[in-house]
Image (tube, rainbow, N blue to C red; front, side):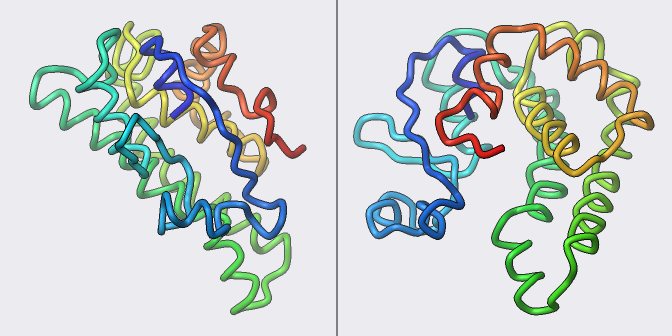
Length: 199
């Protein structure tokens, strides 16, 4: 969400919700009043509140001027959402803290097995994405203009780094990551630059 806000040039206040400290601040009574799902991100815009990255990005694109996160053409917009969902629904949930916690509690898996699980699902998701992006990407995912897909892809690459997933088999994704990392909108959103970063 930080990347999307930066791409569109929207001023915002970042309120850190530490997912580990105090058993996870997303589980606090105060936060649950905002978001009963107890997940991040969560956007507050005046009287409105929204969870889920896709819904937030669609809202930002409809309400605020600036570079479009989604193409205006109906098919291209749907195609962009489809590719975003490969990450949002097909990769990210498998390394969600809640999922990994359940794996540990229910099956008492080792750290190595947990990391192997995460690595498998990341690579399974990146394979079709790499094939698609190879045929359509230029500087960024959908061409020479940034899109919501870049805002979904780059955080996933940081997760690849965290779990030692090599991008050697995904040169197009590596190229897009390298190009995006040159931009202030992505640099400012880097996990290590956030107040709740845990090394």
